[in-house]
Length: 232
Image 1: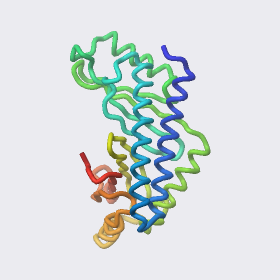
Image 2: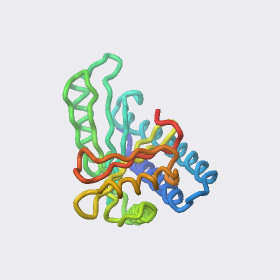
Image 3: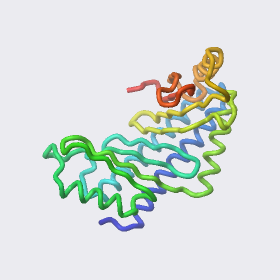
């Protein structure tokens, strides 16, 4: 089993990566028109985030005693007080999990060394195992997150309280932000939807974006932003 120190370092690495990405996101919102500087900043943030998350995948595989290729999709949800990292554990070369392997992974998650709170879902020995880790990051992180929400709200012309859940997915060529926009009253009308969509299409947050009505939260909007020109 890996020492606690290395696990704590992995948790801090995720925090550092996400805070750094949020800082670039803030600058993107403030740049407004400085597209050459913005594009370069996005590229740096994307490369940095991918490298840090690659290291975190290596740490997770070591702590769970599995091959790094068994760590599948990884998504981080940014909350005011913590980051929740959701990831898949794929079956190994045999194509299926055995009981002892599942129990070993569950014990590692339940130990609390990977995060303050953990959860695991297991449906079939041939399907990916779904794991969740909650990581507390302290007051300095809360400051960065609050500043991030303030700037996003300012650029979009809404109140800070209307910036809801924020998800961050790290891909080889892009960082993908998916955040919820909450209506001030009732729901967003067509005029407000079009106004926010026009702001996003300026490209100040990223070159590619989508805006849709939320399926999970009636009346809310779901904004997704890629930091590269490609959504692949």
